[in-house]
Structures are given as C-alpha cells and as structure tokens.
Length: 321
Image 1 (cartoon, one colour):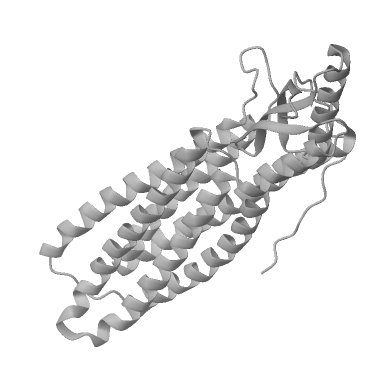
Image 2: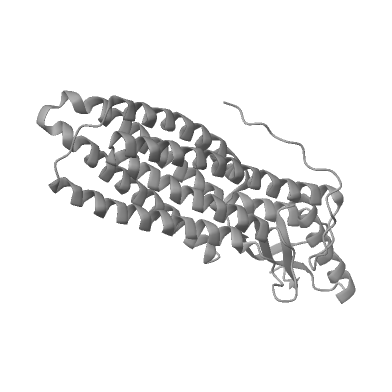
C-alpha cells in the first residue's frame, strides 16, 4: 500500500517572525517538514478510529479479552494521534514576546505525553486481565483471530509509512507514534496466532486469550518506556546527533577568515534545531569585520540548514599558538 504525497499548498501565508529572515527556498523546506508531519499524524488518526470500532465490536461479540485489550490500546492511539496533531500545529507557530524561542518543544512534549499514556493504559489493562484468570473462560470463535490478523496487516502498513516520515524529519512525536503502530502490529499478530491455536491446545485453550492480552500489555509497557527515555533526553537538550554536528562545523568552516570552531552546541527542539557556536577569527580584525564574518556564518547555516530555527553566535580572537 503506497500512501499519496500531496503537493505543498500554494500561496501559503507569510509568517511574522522574530527569527532572522530566510530566503523563499528555506521557508518552503521548513513548511514542507510540518506539512509531511501533520499528514502522517492524520493518517494514523484515521486508521486508529477504524480499528477501534473493528476490534471493540469483534472483542465484545466474540468474547475475546485479547481483542478488547487491543481495542483499548487503539483508543489510546486515537488520543495520542490527536495530541500529536495539535502539538504539531502549536510547534509550527512562530516566536512571540512570551516565547522568544518559539513553540517547537510542543512536538516533543506531545511524544512524551503519548509514551506516558500508553504505559499507564497498558498497566491498568494488564491488571484487569490478570484478575480474569480466576473466572472460567470460553475459547473465542476463530473469526476473532481473523480480525486480529487484518488489524496486524493494516498497522504494519501504517507503521512503515509513519516510520519513514519520522526518520526523514527526525520527529520524536512521530517516532513514538510509529513505534506504537509497530507494537500494535506485533500484538495483533500474537493475538491472531494464539486465537487460531487455542482450539487445539486442550485444557490450556481457554487461557490462551487472556495470556495473549497480558503479553500485549507487557510489550506496550516496554515500547512506551523506550519512547519515554528517548524523548526525555531530547527535552533535556541533549547534544544533537554527530552527523548534524559535523555538518554545522563544515558549513561554518567554509566561511572565509574563520580560523577555528571553538565551541559548538546544537540542541533539537521538536522538528527544528538551535545552534550555539563560537567562531575564532584573526584578532587583528576590526570589530566591524569580525561582526560581518559572524553574520556570514549565521546566514549560511540558516540557508543551508532550513530546519535550524536560530543561531546564537559568538566571535572570538584566534590565537595561533
């Protein structure tokens, strides 16, 4: 299944920004990042709404605890998809007097909230499912396994699409959503296999369904914990990946009369980056000359790296020794 890539809307409204001016090409690339991210969130939301109805109806009609557990998880997915979509809209907003660094962290906060929501929901569901082991259970009809199998295929397709977009944009929220899609696909596959096998397992057959539900919950808790740690590192302004750091160094080093890069900090904020860089120039240059060199470094970084929101630059004298 190949999802369509829609063209970027024409005549996008020009933004009033406190950040440095950019050329049209840079603005177009930056707008495309948010358009693609929001489209991926909408696809995930639409699919999750359909799956909630299918799983919940199938689980209740066919008396499958595993399908009901999976449906509850999909309800959480719907909530998280809405959260991510709203957060992307907020993150896209420009700087204002109250938020001079912009609103980009809204995207990371959404991913953080999604991971906590999935973890909490899975824990509660596991506890409720374990309590059902004391009650006599019937083996669900084989069609419950068929529903789970179809859900597995759909979720795996959405995972591949969302993961591709998340990796291309380096989006924490979309990466968290993609991992949630993958865990759902694995969970649905496990449920399908267990329900198909249950009639052939004799006395163990009635327990296969709740055991599968508990396994689904354990997988969700593990996945959400990994998402939590990853996004927490980003919210704590962890240094950006080595490839991004090296690219900043290369671009700054291309500017004439830049002798050395002394300090470089690059932090990811949502889908964008902030750079703090100290460049060394000949100490005999005038203040005006050093200022112009610094501006050239900043302008090149903004032009060649459209996802950089702003550059904080400091010019220092270069000591040959």
